[in-house]
Length: 304
Image (cartoon, rainbow, N blue to C red; front, side, top):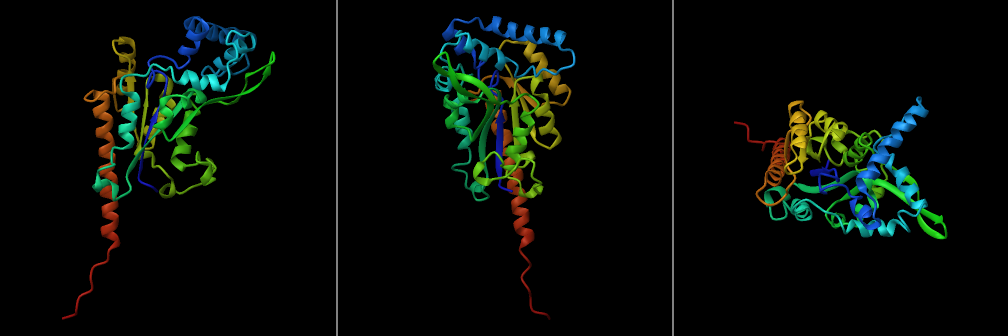
């Protein structure tokens, strides 16, 4: 097992102040609040009509998005435009800079480098993967999970037309297993369902920190906690309701700690996350040193 420390981030309301779709709504003059209200109401109506079906509340919005594209409310929206909207995201303070700092945290730390200890950032989101790839985050993360859409010709224009991959708040756990086994890396050709001994997996669960904003991420929080990893929650400044939510999650043992969504130098989020990374790194270093000492046999001596 490599000595990698994985920081796994949710995106909306964790790294982004709001939803990543907000710049899309602004560009096309769509009331974002009305969009999400319509999205929720449609699910209510469908459940009344089809009482025996399951509806995925996390990803149903993709259907409404594609409808808006067909109706040209989101005129000519394709993956290229999604990447452009990635450049218009409203990140919390110091987000790109902080992730970059974490990537280089051990760059000049010989005592950790000699054991191959390094930090990798990942994003696992129910939003648009291509939009995140178009943002500055693409340069500071190892891999991105999100919903994937492809294009086809509609009304003479190639636009987003089909959903080919989705991530919801439960299947985020699959992404975490992919990070654990390294199966996301196509060059390794590892199936996520393959049986791999724990000591041969790429990232140990206890070397993971999962960071998100609320109750919807409880499946991921729970998996990480059960496997010995660390969990951290974020809440927006001056949002008393969100504060109470994350405090309840701490009381319930879902998260180890929480802080206001500000990653500037000296803030609680900045200091706590870095301190936890060094704590994990010290544990790895201690384990590796013990292995080395135990592997060295004692020097034979002359018999007296």
